[in-house]
Amino acid sequence: MIRPMTTAMVTAATALAMPRSEADLVLLSRCLKETGSPFFVLGAGSNVLAPDEGYSGLVIKTTKLNSD
Image (cartoon, rainbow, N blue to C red):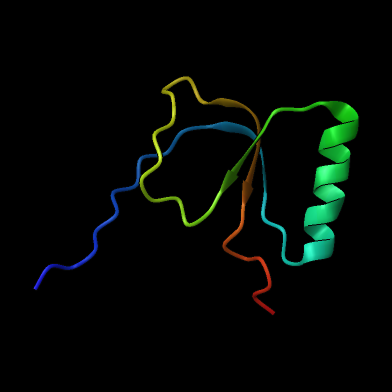
């Protein structure tokens, strides 16, 4: 039997947001549009390559979305 495996390597980002609702996500998108800030939407985080020097922007991790 083959089991799923995810290897975690950590890199830095300027900021991390973990919205819990659609309203949170809408607010984030409005703020990002107004400021023009760079962002990256991250799901569970597997199969992602990140630069060693980190990411200069907001990472939006969606694993908490609608978890209530």
